[in-house]
Structures are given as C-alpha cells and as structure tokens.
Length: 400
Image (cartoon, rainbow, N blue to C red; front, side, top):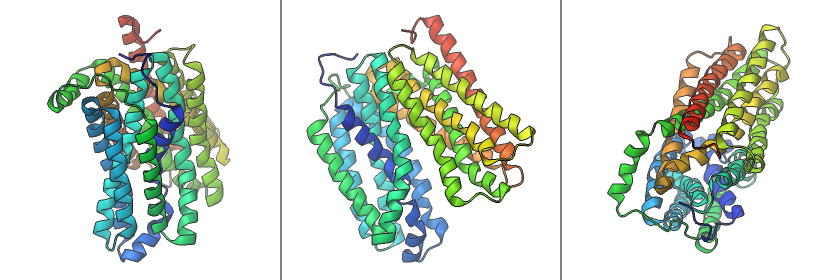
C-alpha cells in the first residue's frame, strides 16, 4: 500500500531513467553496417545485437522486478546502471564480435530502470496518481526511439560506431548519479526472501485480471510491431515513397503515442483506468477500420494508410499507461514483480504476433494484409479490455 508520507521520486528522474532504458534499443542501429565491416562478419550476425538485446531485456524485466520487491528499488537500479555502464565500455573496446555481442547483451540490464520507475510510482501514489505519472513516464518510450537513431547516426558519421557506446557509458554514469543522489528508496516493506518473492510469479499468473491486462497490452504492442514490420513493405508496394517520407510517416505513430500518454497524465484524475484502456482500444479499432475502408475504396495516397495508423499510437498511448497502473495495483506487495512479469509477457507476446504477421504479409499484399493483421490484434485487444471492464465492474474495483 502506498504511503503519502513517503518521499516520491522526482518525475524528471523517473522520465530520465525510462528514456535511458529504451534509448539503447535502436540508437546505434545506423552503425550496424560499420560494425559488420569492422569485425568482418555478415550483417545477420551483427543484427543479433538487436534481437538478442530484446531477449535480454525480457529476462531482465522478470528478474529485476522481483529483486526490487525483495531488496528495494534503489539497490537494483544502482546495480543495473553499473552493469550497463561497464557493458557499454566493453562494447566500445571490443576487439571481436563475440566480445561485442556479449557486452551488448549485458547492456540489457538498463531496462531495470523502467521497472523500478513504475514500482516506485506505485509505492508512493494512489491509483489515479499512478496512471497520471506513468502516462508522463511512458512518453519517454516514444520520444527516445524517435531521437535515438538520429543522434546515433550523427555520432557514427563523425566519430565512428564506437562513439555510440562511449555515449551510452556516459549516460550510464549520469544514470548512476541520478539513482544514487535523487532516487529515494520507496519500498518500505521488502519481502522476506527471494524464494518467496519469485513465488509471486505463480500468484500473479493465477490472477485472471493480471493475465487479461498482460494479454491486452501484448496485443496492443503487437499491433505496433505489425506496423513497424509492415510499413516499409507498404512503401515498397507503392514504389514512389522516399526514405525521408517513410521516416516522417512512420514517425507519426510514436507521436500519437506521446499525445495519448499525455492525455492519460491529465485525464486520469477524472477517468478511471479501465475507461482509458477501453477508449484506447476503441480508438485504434476505429482508425484501422477507416484505413481498410480506404483500401477497398481504391485510395492509394500514402496518408490513406499512414493516417489511420496514427490511431495505433494514440490508442496505445491511452492503453499502456492505464493498464500498467492497474497491473501494479492488483497485488501491491508484488508491484515490482508484477511490473517485470507484465513487461516480459507483453514483449514476448508482441514478438510472437510480429512473427506470425510476417507469415502472411508480403510486398504484393502489404497494404491490405498489414491493416488486416493490425485490426485483428486490435479487436482481440478490445475483447480483452471488455473482459477487464466487466470483471472490475463485477468486483467493484478499478472504477474509482
């Protein structure tokens, strides 16, 4: 249970830690060809630095959340930042691809900053304040991936690919400073043992509402993953969309997420989390239905596809912060564990959806198939949201 007497972490610190958690995902992506040339390996080998990192972050989510419930938020964040800083230095000094990839996977420890941020918010806020603060923090997850590749490309072109990892090391040092001096310990009631804490996974997985929230978020994020994988094929199908234009069009979706998260930050004092989740799913489904209608009407302008897809960002911006707020409230004593488990299930589920969509989408059917796949996952997510709303109305929770 939260305590109003506890010192709440500064929102700016939580936003910074969350941005640092997601920035390493793709900031160095423009450097992948240079890294492949430097180590004289195939591009597919270097690309493990992206896919393997995703697996590492999913495992970190699982472990870090539970450990923060046992040992406290601050120690876990400090260890994570130290590991990230050391791994970043290792990447910058790597002399072969094996050392580089090993250090790159260890960089995944930084994702603990996001799990700790969410748990710290839950420790010090009531439910509506939780949704509001998570809404603002979640914006970092959209902003950082938008600016990261631009910054990474500039560093690579001027100083070489290793400059990206030197920058990560410096950011890691900054993260250590923020955690050490500006992140108060908010877990006043740590669990008695690690074994008992990890048993919390079973308790959470037996919770129908927890699983429904995790499913709703996985389907919502999976919709975004389908878009990210399919949008370049849509552009290729059309044939006259430049790379710059494609970047602009794709950037409209995370911009929509920022707006949606900002709305949650302001509206959560007046609307319940379940209302915001349901509104987000309705918005996404409506936009994608319009997009499919334009396809069948024969409208071929790029905005006829990318415009309706903005609803994916807007809808997820409403859904994800509100759903995370409710996940953290199901078992207050397991806030860190719940945050980590939900995040891991969300990422894994979304990855499965992205893989499945790749089996049905190709350059010949991209526009209709991508929209159809996104609408399918969005409708399933809407069904999960409807189940959540019914369950919480029946139980008399989540409506305040």
